[in-house]
Length: 84
Image 1 (cartoon, rainbow, N blue to C red):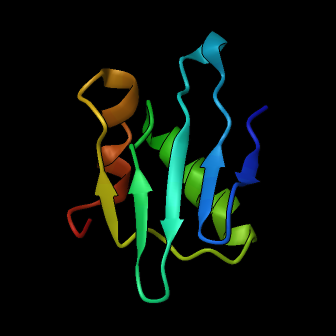
Image 2: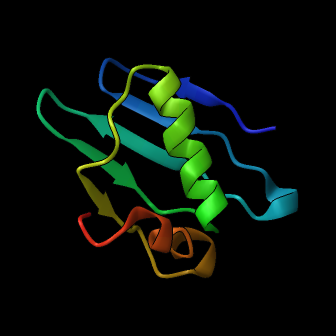
């Protein structure tokens, strides 16, 4: 099971699971905006990450940045909509 870890005052990440090819996802939380790092390997992965962060009081991402174009880092983009 994936967990959400806080690694600093403004940084969170979701632990990876190699058996299901779920990579680490990250979120940088600013005072006005949030930056999601990678989109995950599916819509379910992206939504799980966002929902778990909401439980911690973190807003939905204002922006998304992709570290690279491998499928396990981009297939969750469709869950994030066009506004990111």
